[in-house]
Length: 334
Image (cartoon, rainbow, N blue to C red; front, side):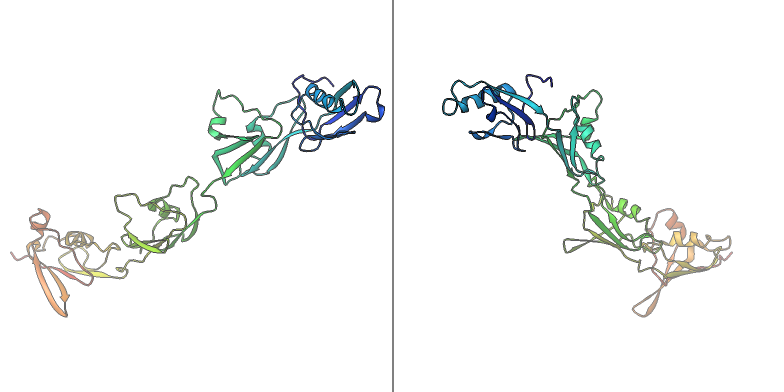
């Protein structure tokens, strides 16, 4: 077979050794996987990585002068071993990929021939080992327009690293619509608001101000409406408690549109103006200047008179109600 002068022998190649005038020494030999050939008289000889001419010169030097006088030797390639590379790591079908004769195989094609990247692959961590050197690539770079293909050589080893966040989980419990374990994003980035979105949001009874994060045996209390970004890590257990205001109410009586009980907000924040608005607002006969708020303190009833006009104009600070408060809007006297 016609061969390039640069062809170098490799493991599993078959060579034909011919020794002129010594037919008993002529034979066809298969190189071992490591590139050694067992030859008559001289035994094992390392021929891997040598050209045919270099192999002839080496063997000639070993046969003379101890074994043969002025030997004439030729070494030809009887059958070239299949060239192949190894693809391992986070691909769908790891193993060996053959390089067809008289063709080239590039890095992207080798990964594709192995089924492509597995779901847990890290596309930014692709290693190509060639001899003692290791080269690093990313799929983004390999697929970039105008980027030359990385041509592989026999014996190359491609290792696709596993994403460090693969198979990592985070747990969210309590007052969310889909509690349980969730897969951690392979980007490695996850914050509390995104996690709650992944759990299909809070229930109506959640206390968003008392969320607990358990991490490495320690508990941290956080609020969802905190302005800072609250980062979540693999292994975290996030618990959203039920609001202590579930079932709590305040009572609005007197001259409002819809007197009666009003459910307390789950975040525990209900001011007097908002409560009266929820009750339909003060009607035309109501006395806004004499609204009373009654509250039991230490077993005794305490009452405070509030001028809604002063509240609306910001002359006095907002008055926040507590569960079981009673708000009374009296009739205006003409």
